[in-house]
Length: 342
Length: 264
Image (cartoon, rainbow over all chains, first blue to last red; front, top):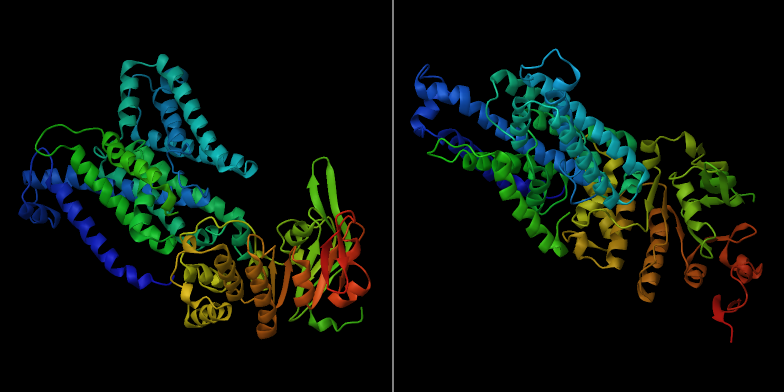
């Protein structure tokens, strides 16, 4: 609102860092690729070379996925924190990921239980996507319905945790009846993974993501008025119920798509908005939405670069790395709570 | 009662307020007929629990009336959309801000919300109105401070500036003087009085500072168990309205000084 132009330099720096992280992310891996060949592959002047195949078929989709996942989770976390006016809210805490997990568990593990049709064959990525999206949407609606009746924000968090418990319970029951193969697919999905997405899958992810992102950008003005509380927001002409719904749609599209394609990636949704507020020192969503986007993408690219352990053939579960980065941030926030930006 | 209708900004007709529940409606007060004129400062007083906040919440359309009608600029409040209402009525509430991380300027700028485009871009005209609001409330020195750095009194002034920036015919404030010391109570009410004179806006506020309100208000609305009376403060005193405001065992109204005294 006021000092928007003051943030221009920060944005330019962050875009440069993002670009740098993107290039580094692509160049690192079990095989280190020289910078010259990276640019050559990106502009397509070295078709069919080994470097080019590795980059265009594996590393580029993975880096793009990292950008989508990091920015998407950051933004959906920001939307939830403002909507629920709770600094500890986020897709993970409120059970959107749990809902997605439940949906995916029902599809992967439940396929043996309910339908004999697809037994034996592993479940396709597409049914996982649909299941995760539906699961996250249903949980969010449930949480919102409850939050309309319960004014206490702590109650909402506990309800989110309860959904997590229900999910875990259902998954235990399902896994009891599942084959080892199905179980392994579910467990690996739970680790979170940015790799193994084909270009088609990245494209679908991108379309759903961009839809959610557009809705979140349209909600910026309303989000700012919600910073004053529902009554003030209404007095400023905001249709609170309507925009609540819009914000939830946006979050469930983004967080649902992320969880569907990359698994339940932890902590990023909670930590990134706080990290960004601390750096940009503002609550204005006109600044926060683009900066959370950049911050999320940067952090996710860094996490992924670490996760693939450069120079080795190992790839650590991305969830382990995001938690290693995210958890200290959350602890740090709680320790200095007195001056916490929110 | 024979006032010129064109000057009336807000009017209630036989209003009944309260809460609707599944078991039936709980009426808190009824038969409320008040008329608020342009450019006047009106104080709403009454004992705790008499329904001041409920009345204000009904007037700002946070809760529906049980009976009767509210007219804002001659239009029924229930027919006005949130967007249309936002250009005619602004509020200052007692509730805490969700985010105190906003700068004073950003907070006041939110008052322009009903007039800006889809993403809230401020036009030169909006900036002029914001600057003017900040100037009028005399918080220019605070404009780049964050809200969490402000005292209660400063924050109250910022919230008033935000309501001014919304540029509405009427501003309604719910207990703007709570949590403030004696000086700042007087300061805020004096500020409201000055704003009605300078901007010709109507300002309605609820308060427990009855003696201050008597000295500063053009009109007062007194809520009692039996009825709701609106008149000029001096008329209310001569009609002995304040004498029956509270139970008589502890304090009594001194009509000579216009204030309450503790019975000895």
